[in-house]
Image (cartoon, rainbow over all chains, first blue to last red; front, side):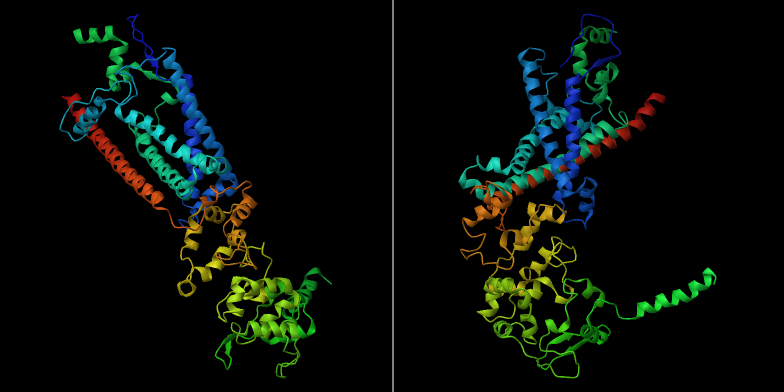
Length: 250
Length: 310
């Protein structure tokens, strides 16, 4: 995942943060996410407010078409997720990436301290911003939220889309409540996912003054070393240890 | 003659033609309608019932019964408005009218007259849970033709959106009684059937115009509707396998509970409560985070500038 570039003294203007495969996975993820959100919202709020959902559903070609889009997008998203998991396992197995405290996306105790420090900074108690590694605690939250969503929404969605298949798997004693549970899980957690993306992701990657109108890394995969140094100092130091020493020496 | 002059003669003639009764009615029907299309309001019978006097000609003509003459259903009446109703009635219609007299106090003959053309369906209805409520239990609120189809003067085909039993209106029509508190309490009906249907995927899809979404009658039947405790009901016990299987081929016993009118199971209920707590907790955290972040950004923008200036 991370490119280390310690052999040369010259610091490149920008480095690749996400390769083409990650970028593709992200594009598929947000495309399917938007399709699922729009078509699913109309069904969740079918009876309110006063026919607005009917208009939303008609924009997607009516209830039959919206349902089809929702199912295709759902399967697409699940496949995208599986692709990502296997790709990560492949990278780990072939040692193309390794788990390091500074670059891993796995939550560590440091993230809790970072969050605390960030809140102190927000409130003006401290002047020091937390020093982040490759992923900030919020980015890790964002990443694992997708996993949570995939397990809760993905599985329940699969059951609701293919009930005949799933009815052969579920045990008889659960048949009385599991379908309602699937439907409630699917709809409640989908709302959570939409609101989460609308607030955290849109604010941090679109609205924030330094990235407005968007953080172009989704398209180019590149991050300038200046931004990296500013926002992910621990990763920067890991990537350019010589440069870092030089700067500290001066 | 100039073109304009012709127009001056033709236009009033065209207008006049609008004022004459429309064609399409037989003479005796036109006789009745001459008054009943103009009369407004209701008249009270000796038994205290209110009878609507007005008939909307346009709607009547557009209905499936538009070509019938009045006396085909209002059998006892004759074309002469000045004679008292007393024309002979067939024994078949009389027999039915006596069965339904607990419901149709005013003119059971007219209500039974539907059987003249719709005999088979009428028999089914009288055998159904709706009909037997009238014929056996002698109640007045069992559903009969008019309760679901509306006035026979204005009945349209079921696939027309204005029909009371169309996909658009059927649920509401059933709800007229099945959402009615007095009826629910009187007959000990399940009180949440309308609500649970509307909240189910079936109900949501139907409301959004899904072409394959079921209505009430898709599962429960229509004219021959049975109580859910009747073994002949399509939703009784194992009959559900067949009923659900009509749309979901291969429906098995673990599939059937997926959509019912049953109350939410406690496990599903508390799972949802837990998820709502989680959702609200996450909302609170992220909204606080974004607001504080934005606030500190604005603060930094002001202070950083000041520092650079110094």
